[in-house]
Image (cartoon, rainbow, N blue to C red; front, side, top):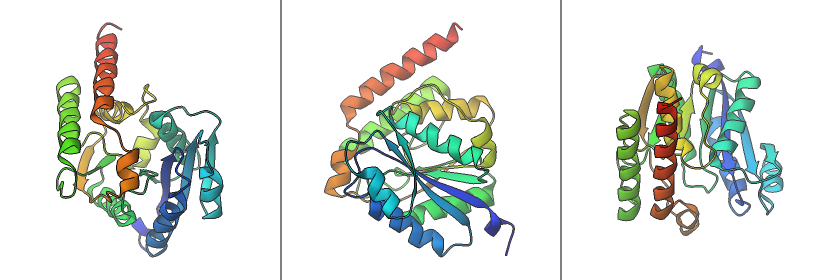
Length: 237
């Protein structure tokens, strides 16, 4: 067994009202990682769901952490990463609870992070955007541009939910926002503390369900407003 194969990997999935698909998400991750040589655990962070997300995930074999109230994607992600750090995992991943990410791409990211010795690896949908709607391409490119302007970070897909974290990132990376704007703020904070950021191409499953669950471009306007407010505020701190 190699040094890499002994690494412990936390597969974190923030989820809100995903009872319809969450068991499949858990099983897909389990099938793929059971064939790898990593020691892994699947961790669902149920962000105050009003449906059976927690019970479906637990029945499928995941560890479930449950928020009493819905607190936002940024908060749910922070909870999962904090758990991974406290439990001594070497690597953590995040992927979406609506089933849009391929488990194979999660494993691919873990392998790349180990090989490249990166700290934060972003799974980019825009390196190859085949199958992605033009509206989503425009929206995501726009937010990536704003991220570049505000924080000086060049990535193709700043809003991707598929991310891979090193142990160093688990121990040091923190952010202040709790909504979807955390995706850009996370990159800002990672850059501030000198973490090595990289990205790799992924494919996305665009089912009718995942399309309905995703962000819309109107929400992107609110994200931009929040990021600008945060950036300006810290200029005067």
